[in-house]
Amino acid sequence: MTIGDLLNLWQNRSIQKIDNATNKSLEGLYKQLEDVKAELWETHQQALNSKSNTSASSKDKEQAGPVKTVEITIISGPHEGSNFSLRPTSRTPAFAGRSTGKKFVQKGVSLPDDYQVSTTHGKFTIYKGAAYFTDTGSTNGTSFKGDTEELQIDERYELNDGMVLVIGISELSITLGYE
Image 1 (cartoon, rainbow, N blue to C red):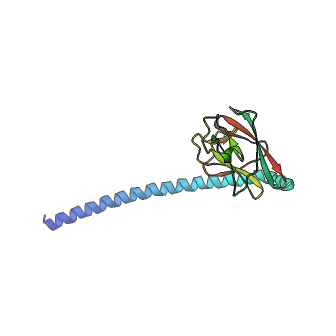
Image 2: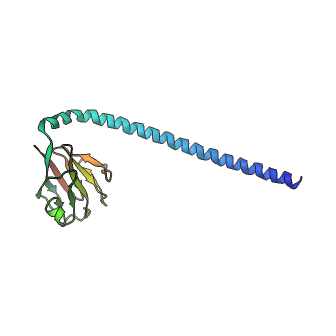
Image 3: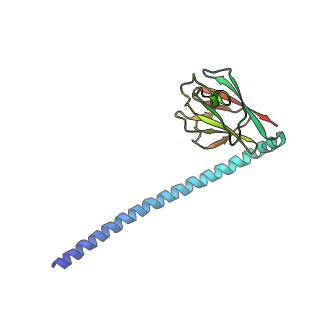
């Protein structure tokens, strides 16, 4: 066997190893693609179901007019019995958190004695006549009472009358004020 034959043999083995590794990588990527497709389809189906479930409540909101205020009553936690009247907009949200800063005390929800609440926990906004809450990256998360899943960070969630928002160990009852 010559040196040239030996080099060709090593080259062919190397090419075969590279081909095998490439095929394994491609198989893994195709599996991931199929998993993501299935997850996307499931999310799409959930969104369609959610849309059909909320169409009746959307008609009720249209009859009531656009939301102008968000009234918060603390129903449990260190600040139980406290009330907050918020007038957020899409440009000037009302913030909720442990902070005692001006924007929390005067125009938001300040919960300084609830140590499970982040300094800036979330924000309330009104956009196109509907009220929303967004978790702005809190440490301990936010959920709706009775729902085990935490809200996704920086995702806007529409609020309805009677909802109870759980931030820290405080429960905030939501009442919407219409035009």
